[in-house]
Image (tube, rainbow, N blue to C red; front, side, top):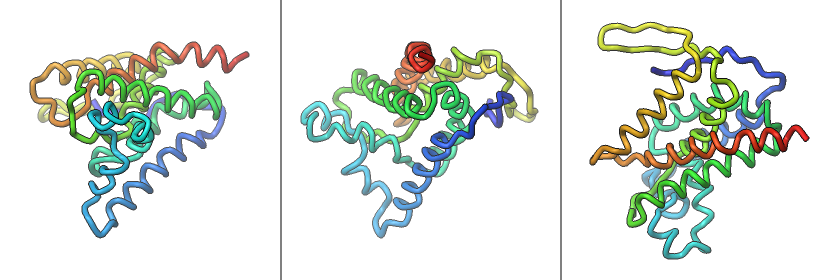
Length: 213
């Protein structure tokens, strides 16, 4: 199931959601036009668990810089699609400052979730997936029955249906848990997705209530 658009209007223009998308796209284009392979950026800006654990004070900025790196056009496109569909409503609820704080807190906890489950990894972790997973968790709590226009593909059958966010997002998190249990993770930091999602579920109401005071 691939979400295409939600039917959940916002009161304010999602400036920061759009800004995050533009920054991610700009970094990707910059990396793609380097005279060397785009992965050269990973050496200084990707999060590598063993490096962070061995030298946390020197390497901790990579927790944040890694959120703006992507491994390919499909990785970038998928993340930005989810951020655009679900991020605008969370920004609308939290306001600008708390939305940014929420985004990076969820991204940080997502990174810690990955590190805690793979401390010996020397594989660079990149992508906004952890922070966006927090956005998805927040959306599940705040708008569980908002309708999402979703592309559904089953073999030779496909359709576009309006389904409640709770079905789409619970299906999404089920896939993350299922894939995390596989012996071959395919190089994806599934526990970062799970950690970010749990963070979003747990933190959105405290952030929302604090924002409304």
